[in-house]
Length: 197
Image (cartoon, rainbow, N blue to C red; front, top):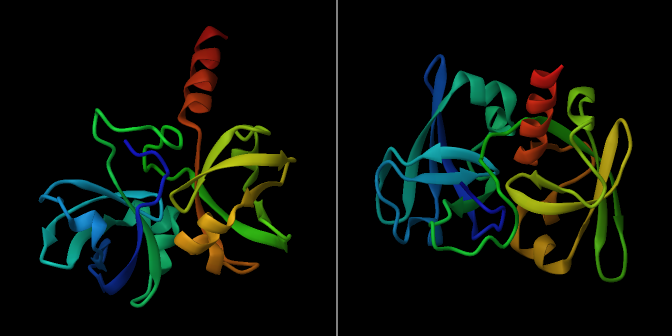
């Protein structure tokens, strides 16, 4: 479980295709400070397992399902990524409950800078729109954010200077693909209501 509060920006060192999977090597500092083999680290919002590590990199295996459903399928060496270690049981929940299970991708439809923040509009697939609510939580590339407006095909978030500086969202451009994880509570509420019908 994660919180969507990015701890650092790491960098993809290498991507090795393995047929039905890929092996990523990622440079990190904070995320590696106490990482053990088998630990979970969210990479752009995708929960990955530390398979190997050294002093400044960790290796994670990414299966075909994840490559097909997230932006990690187009990951390239040199790309920056948002990193967050799993939340300890006694940690603060600064963002919201994030599983690291990406529900789909969207693309940046518009970026509108203002004096003290930037509004970013994300175009979304139709099957995700029903889960997104104004003033609700959403995770974009591993960053916990509040939805400021939503319609059937897109939603908007406001990014403060800290988010723009400390995460990869400050470098995104119109057309870029981003990973989306909707609020897990919405998925369970829908499932429970379906069971009642």
